[in-house]
Length: 508
Ligand code: HEM
Image (cartoon, rainbow, N blue to C red; front, side):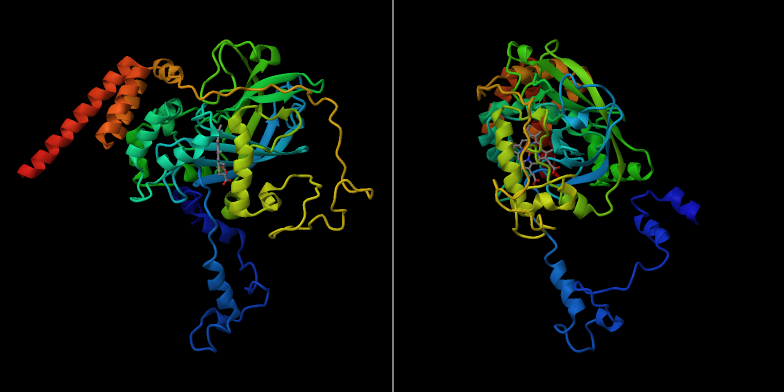
């Protein structure tokens, strides 16, 4: 029987049976939330002394009706796993960060993988930018690196966050994704085009979360124990082999399974086929970074070949599925502001805005004590923060609660090697179509990729209202003449097909 189950049911499908095999007897006597043992007659409300005198029933209904918390405003649908990061190379020349130093050192991690724009019940395979975020529980506090599966972000000005998210999520009247709104904002703010091009290419539908890369995108400042500064972009490179699905494949799979990426990750970890990534960084010295002929802090563009070198740091391995999804994944709060000594703040404006946005949204979504939730708690913490909406855990007990004080509350340390200069970046909103043009010319390496990219653009432009569609087609032509001509031809043909089909329907 066990062989039959093991051979025919995937781990995700036999989870309940696995639980029973591990627990041959009930795990204990049922109790109320306050701990009173529940008599079997209290498990029904019929023919006893009324609903409201039944504490078990009250717990049951009045808790379940309050089960929901707000979903994340973006990246709402995600899955997660635990594992470790292991240092494989000596990078002490670049950063003194404890987590990246000492070959062989392992640091526990939590990871969340997500889809960007769909809501919690959405489709893992919708054509969307994916999120790939890692929380390292280091000896110097939590380091959170939040990445996407594409190496560029959408805009340089944080005031674009709301218009972009509104236009790309659901229309306030129809509650549908609205391609006219999407192309409207794209044509009014063409800086978005480069990021969106990645999305419309094969990279917009990775074959599950295991076979995609991750890019935190920002240029981080690193510093070593002498205070020397370097600048780095981190990359997480899949060891499963990068694999994308075509739109047709993604549509076919999602017809059967909206949770394809979630299931694939769970099953592989359960089968001990642990997914792993190489963590590396592209590095420039503080001299080189000020002498390149482009803005290396611009999150919407790639670094030019030949201006940096790539350094290996270590390996990320995911080897444990969470026992409880809500506790480990829904309650997780990844915040790019969580940095450690030796990995300093990226100086661009988007990063500064993110320090505010994540903290604020997590205070709203999880409460002001969200960093005290298990999955978010660092290994070590001594603060002057107290009280607030529970859970506060031990709340620093009787330690003095004001700083400074003369009674041995926690004291700051002196970071002798902290760099005493900061680079200042002037971000620009200027429209530059070069990155989008390079994407079409050089990133899409073969004709198959180009054609699928064009087909996806055509598909998205067909339902757009004519005046916006016309602007979009003109813009694509400005990016690249050939691209513009091919997309226009595709849209014209697709619209003619639709017209013929509807005429046929009328005639019939
Ligand atoms: C380089 C740019 C960015 C990257 C790589 C990025 C990546 C991500 C990722 C991966 C998540 C999902 C986190 C998780 O799994 O829990 C996320 C969530 C989020 N992002 Fe960003 N993002 C970027 C820019 C921004 C900007 C500019 C804003 C707003 C000013 C923003 C606001 C948010 C918010 C509010 C969430 C939800 C967080 C939560 O509820 O815990 N992001 N982002």
